[in-house]
Length: 282
Image (cartoon, rainbow, N blue to C red; front, side, top):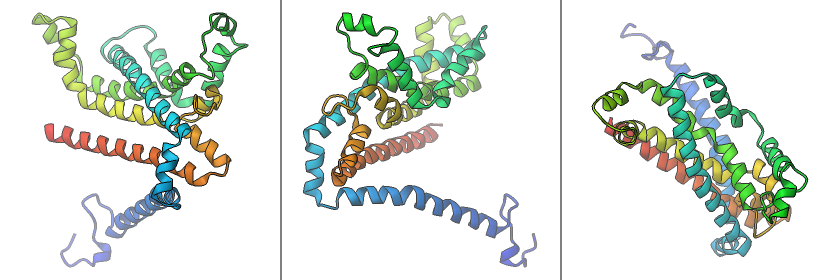
């Protein structure tokens, strides 16, 4: 490129004209502002429309408190279980060759392709009053559908791939040479995992847990099918927002929705901090 080239014809280091670069940046910024920032701002504006006192009152309402607690409890159960499954599945897929490996990968990815509503209907078919195990569960006074266990099961299903899918490519890229060296030097399986494998995957594991937790707290479709929408008992925060909005309590609905948005933003902030820390450590 000549030093005297007109600005309109100058090119970036990637070979694109400068105007193309700025056009793409402008389109991306406009898209983010229109479809992400503006809706979030509208949620908070509507939530605070009647004042901060009304906002706090909507969050302190007993049904809202119950929905918040149930959402946090569901995530607190589903995420650790998916953590165990994700590490085990990623270890098997990345470190070993066995018959049925491709099928296992397909099963891990299944929740990405199946509608959450369909997943909820499957649980109703299996555990509902007229389902496969329904009569046995009723005879033993065990409630799964329209109760907390059903909500947890549905949440586990839809969040199952997040941790495994974060770890599988990371473990495959790292290989198994370090683990084999540790075993040759006399380390046990647990020692190898805690001292070799876990330090190598800790940041990917953290990303997966953060994404899994965010998905668990925001799940609507599958939970809606299995919960029964019982106010104060089986309504999570997304379901409580729907109930309030359908009852024309828009300010209260947006107040709870804003809390969900704050949790999402907090998740994003934690992920960004973790990513920066990982880069600094590298």
